Length: 116
Image (tube, rainbow, N blue to C red):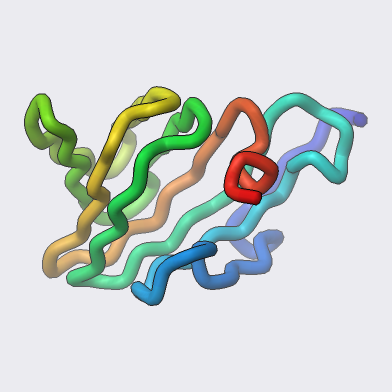
């Protein structure tokens, strides 16, 4: 694999697997490319909620908007330029309120393989 750069325009955003909310993801690097991580973008419409137990270690960078991540330990809010780390095995609820959110993510290992 070679050095590359990406923008949101490079992502093919599809509905996040296993849910009906207006939450979309687009992998740019994943298991198909031979590296150990997945890199992509996520788009959350306003008033959306996604609840799951993390099957991978996930780093989410908020590029636009604001979202909350709730766990048994509490809730954090992240806005533009902030990073949220969600460890493998953690039960999380990711939610938007009146603002939509655009995120970039990096997971280890590949999240698509972990959801099969």
